[in-house]
Image (cartoon, rainbow, N blue to C red; front, side, top):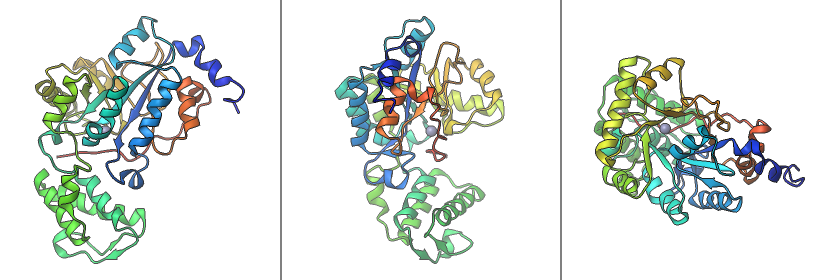
Length: 341
Ligand SMILES: [Zn+2]
């Protein structure tokens, strides 16, 4: 109704919108059917392409994040400013999103966790969940060597979640390494009669490897901080170690000094801001919904988390600014990529 009445156009062209920056947040772009498994985390390449076309059609100014924040401070933003960010640095970014961005000449920031860039293996907890989802509707016995307490009831999300929890708890109890967890996931796939090697070969639920990160960075993608292990410990020393290790790895891969951060899983605490300051981090993004203005705390920058569940109207509403005025604030997706060692 508002779009029909010209409100979208009016707000999009307003001085109010001109003084604001919209930071878009994306996670995974499906290689196969991941968006059917986690629509809050994955979308198809077709949907992403259509979003990028909408940015162009609405005359949005897509800026690199650092430039956008500098121009916000100096009051020099172009009309309908947008910055595009991708969390985690998945292989599907490299394979699906990056060519679409490149084709249109759109800059983007990738918040890269770096633990898995050295290990070309699927992310454990997500892979277990994905494998179980592929056998949804079934009830299976769990062989002893899986270390679960009872049979696997895969008929509901809750039932599948319990199995994933059981596997994570076991890996923590036995202090399994990344490679050992990979073998556990492989064993689960075997029990479920799913070809694990095929999933691994397609690089589903994997992060970019060192060569791919270096390649996209060399080609202009802005690679920034997301913690080394996708963790934000509540102890200062450990928290700062996560930032440093992440920054060191990014430097060795890209030759650049990362100073922008994204809170893993959107989780932040008051103390984190001081610790980020001490580590010379100049901006940090959350998964809270909103536009950024010059009074926004640079270490608490809101974003619009775009997912398969967002309608075209909703997306357009956020680009022009009406979305935030109407406070169309849905909770950000609760399930994030959580790579851990
Ligand atoms: Zn993340």
